Length: 307
Image 1: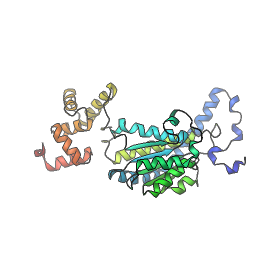
Image 2 (image 1 turned 45 degrees about the vertical axis):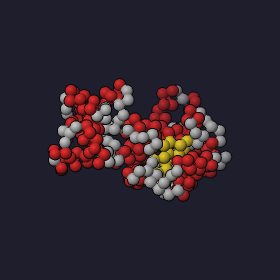
Image 3 (image 1 turned 120 degrees about the vertical axis):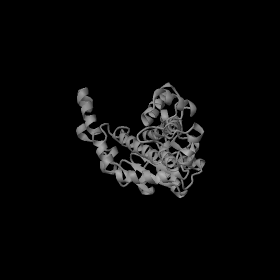
Image 4 (image 1 turned 180 degrees about the horizontal axis):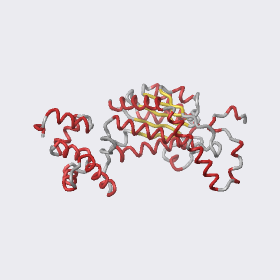
């Protein structure tokens, strides 16, 4: 096949043809050197990533959802990012959704031909009943995966915000989307294995997108995960540390506040910093849209009579 017809992520570097004969340490040095090019490439797209964050956050503040759509490794990374949002940010499972060509089976194994079936994306997005408040992010290394391109086109036709994330420039995916993010990192050490540098790009950008959106939505307080769900011993200990860090309260007071608020760190912080009871903290957080900093400011403006 003509190398010029392939996207950079699929091309073969002749000077890497002998990697199977390299000493292990030299092979790892080569991979590590290539990996170091990824953050710089992502940095070149920060303005576009920021535009996607702000536009997504504005829609989610109005009740929308964030939906990732992709195939293969790209789809799995979207599913992973979506799955991490409930335990990290206390979101409902339906708020951030990961769609992968071939469905759940494709998360742990290949579903032959699924990425070439645009009708699968059309059906899955129809089932979600998209609205203009939703955001759909198509993720594809090549930027030309039929499933992913169809997902973005379908979402845009439904009035949702659409974002295309690709690792090649001038792709059909970015052309189909309202907002495009193109992070070009070139050929892979293992030719065509886009779970490598391209996958790292996707992971970094999705990390930025979901984390920054949640920060904009008030799901953090400073750099603390105040909406973390304390569902096991480790997370209960983390919630205790978060409340302690945010308030400076002693161990007994933190334990008492967490007990009164059902283990909800954000509520416990407001209880301690505003000197209110748990029901009042819950009401004040609801009034501020769950934004702890705004709830604290509103409480201090109105005075202690709100207790």
